[in-house]
Amino acid sequence: MKTYIVEAPSNIAFLKYWGKANVDQQWPSGDSFSMTLNNAKTITRAQKSKANKDLVTIEGLTEGHRRAEKHLEKLRHLTGFKDHLVIESKNTFPAECGIASSASGMAALTIAALCAWTEAESFEDLQQHNFSREAVAHLARMGSGSAGRSLWGGFVHWQKGTEPSRQKLCQVYPPEKWQLCDLICVLSNKTKSVSSSGAHQAAWQSPLFPARLAVIPERLAMMRQAIEKKDLESLGTLLETEALEMHAVMMTGQPSVQYLSEKSIQFITWLREKRRQDGLPAWFTIDAGPNIHVICQSNQSVKIIEEIHARFNDIDIIEDYIGNGPQIKLTCD
Ligand code: DP6
Image (tube, rainbow, N blue to C red; front, side, top):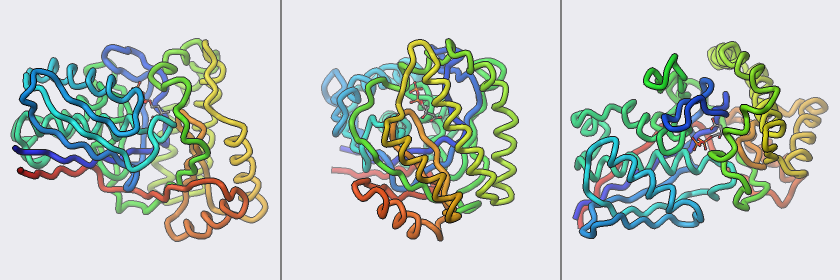
């Protein structure tokens, strides 16, 4: 029996996808832009099932089974494949706490399911079956928007386009462009109380949301310019503004959603002070959870980890960096 093993990375959004213009078609309210990670990933095994239902095992996820089964159903509907699948999935990092497990999880599940259905052993084979990388990315984003960006390594752009069918996903720069690190500071690995899917819609009631949407194109252009120049101070300043703005929208939506904990605030206050006083070259971004992603150059990461641990000795840090994107392997037994 052929088993397809897919390793798909998570990604950290530099420009955040927050709010949906159309929920059914997973049409975001604005463009987003991310860096694909290397170590934080989902490993998913898929094979055709002899039973007439999917058998899904997702290690450590409470909500994961249901979402995965729903996504498989959707994929069958969108692609016309009929076979049920046996899926086993695990993460290299804590899930459902704002480290974008749905991004790597849905990317891995989508690729693995397509491989099992088409018997493709590589992205080139998938392309032969009319599933270009971008087509796979669009199927993945139907499971979770951010998953579409995990189909490539390096820096990835999800363009909203003028209508749902004109969305685009593409790699903007390969990973060699800039060896940035993401030190994922796990302040809490508890499951978040509100899933990001549930909270996206609350953004429309925030009085801050229209202003946020208006600024996205310019902010994206500035982020790209900072990456072109490898100007971490400019990029870092944009990252922090972006993350704080998204959390302000979350907190002022209806219902108000607060992902930041007291410890998150303590951490970012310390980081900013450390930068101001001692010139620590580190900036933060935060997704839909309390955990802090510290972005820095790879040659500074050891020193920055030491500084973090000297102040917060109980924090687990997942040391990650820009990665190459997903991989497909085949085993036969
Ligand atoms: C804060 O991709 O989890 O991580 O499409 O409903 O699954 P769904 O949402 P999801 O939202 C991600 C939000 C974010 C920002 C980002 O990754 O761009």
